[in-house]
Image 1 (cartoon, rainbow, N blue to C red):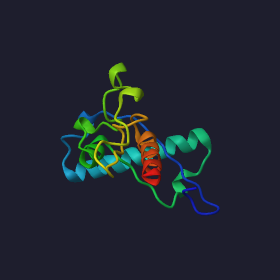
Image 2 (spheres, one colour):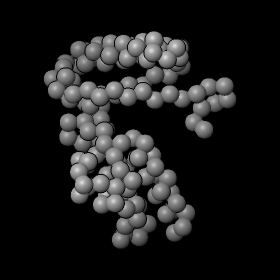
Image 3 (tube, rainbow, N blue to C red):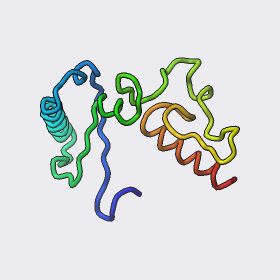
Image 4 (cartoon, rainbow, N blue to C red):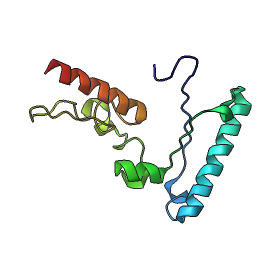
Length: 131
């Protein structure tokens, strides 16, 4: 697993509009991000009873974070649009015509999102092991 013995990992997701974040000054951005993070954790604690406020590590991301690290316009966390002609079977494969070049990420199979990007890496790793 991803956690040490006696610990666990929890991923929480909440959708938010890029417009809410794009024009904030750096200090405003940080302040708002921490407030949203704290409120969301508090809400999930109330709903589940899980003491998330005791977490050792907390990381949060906004559409601006996603835009910065992925280059996706408006901070899309899922990559290509989820239309029929861009669905799983039509996305890029991990192997490529260039020897020893493998493609990984949310624009490749199996599809968009962070979980799929992780799966894409595992699939590419299998291609590497076979080559």
